[in-house]
Image (cartoon, rainbow, N blue to C red; front, side, top):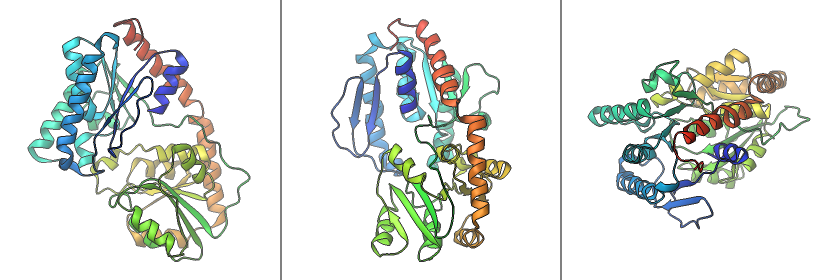
Length: 359
């Protein structure tokens, strides 16, 4: 979201933000930013249903309250998309639906409920004034038509706030890094810890929060080769990853949505000029294999151990240099051309069809 904020601010387009602070702490509002504080557990699924209903009610009421200054509503995923869609229908405002992920796929919702939610998401996406998807692979997943002028493919490319750390010479002990959510399943982090822990040729650096935080913290406190930094802000976390020899971002196929993964870690490894270790059978896996900017391995501890055993400095350096080359060739100007360019242009066009204060 920060990239949207920066692009709109630079273009002089006014905006306001409604966010959900899910740890339940009260966050003081600052000009233009309003937070809903209601505790919700990460990955709790249907157990968050009451909180989700309260959030949607809150979003709808807030939009109605500020309707006179609203020209366009930009909603992320079905969590905010449903209430925003209702508001836009009632008050004739254009809706921008930003689909980070397919709602049911990432939450494992099947059966009748899954089909109903898929239908609702597809209906909103097709009726929105603009629908944003994270990659061209997602057209079929969301039931959208390639070439539809109301669909914008906007890849999750960083705004290049962190430059590669040079000079760099990869050597043992390998510095292996992960920065992100510490999910207990589906991301291979438990396998990564098991494969790396106790190896004299590896130093595992992990920053983030989530279910596996206690395990990484305990491993670090045990005086092993594991270093755990806790939750970090984006720039600090990327700064840590810039010091690594290899960045990790695995997406196990036990989550159907990972077959369409378009993660920020893929773009971050290019920006930082460091090779990426990811999962075979996923889009980032296919990309790093095609561009020789990393490795795509099978799921499980045994595959990770085999990969570690075969690492050599020349291969690590070669893939890191290739990652930096791909960034320069394809993505160095992406933020300016797509976020500051295409996205802002689309928002301006929608604003011209509504109110003139640009909010």
